[in-house]
Image 1 (cartoon, rainbow, N blue to C red):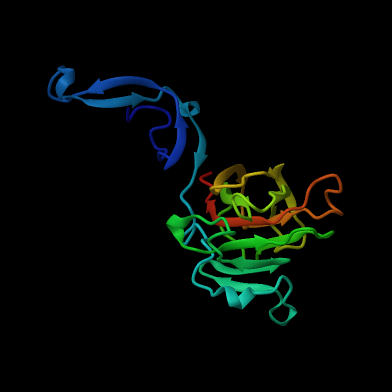
Image 2 (image 1 turned 180 degrees about the vertical axis):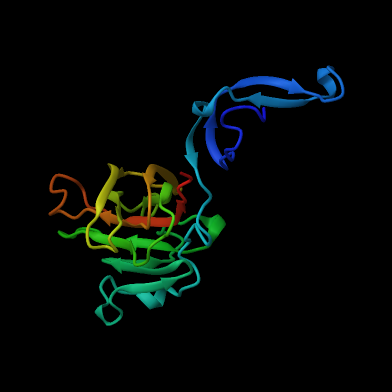
Length: 230
C-alpha cells in the first residue's frame, strides 16, 4: 500500500521475501480475474538483498588468446592480462582452453583460468581494478582440472579475498573452499556486505599456506560481482 512506512523504498532485483499471498482486482472481487500478489508486512520481510551485477560481469575470461598467458609466471607483462572487465593478475596461473582437461562453463565460452598445482606459495587470480559501489554477492564457477577417468583428481584449497585499499591489504571472505569438484563446473556464492570501492581475488593455497592439504590444479571461470544495494 502507498501508505506503508516503507512505500518509498525500491524493490530489490534479487532478494528473499516473506509475506501474505493474496489476489487483487480493482474492478471486482472475483479471484479468477485478479492478479496474484504477495503482501509484504514490513521492511523486515525483505532480506538477503542483492543488487544488479556490475556492467560487463560476469567476467568469462574469453576474448584473450591463451598464448598471451601461456606460462605460469611471465614477468615481462607483470603477470597482468587485460580481459573485458579490466586488468587481472594471473600469478602461477594461465588461461586454460583444453576441453578435455579445463573445466569451464560451455554456455559462456571455451576458456577459464588454470591455477598451478604442487607449489609451496599461493597462486592468484586478482583484479587490478576497483569496483565503485561495493558488493553484496560474488559468484564463482569452479572445478578441478583433469580428465574424468584416467588422471588422478587431487583436491585443492582456495579462498576468496577482497581489498578496499587498492590491493595493499586483503581480507578473507567466508570459509576456505576445499575443491573436490571433478566433473562439471559448479557455482559457489559468497554473500557479502561491502560498501565503497572494492576489488577481489582468488587465492589458491600452496603448501606453505595449507601444509596439511592437497595441492591439485584448480580451474576458475565466470566471476560475477553484484553491487551493494544499501
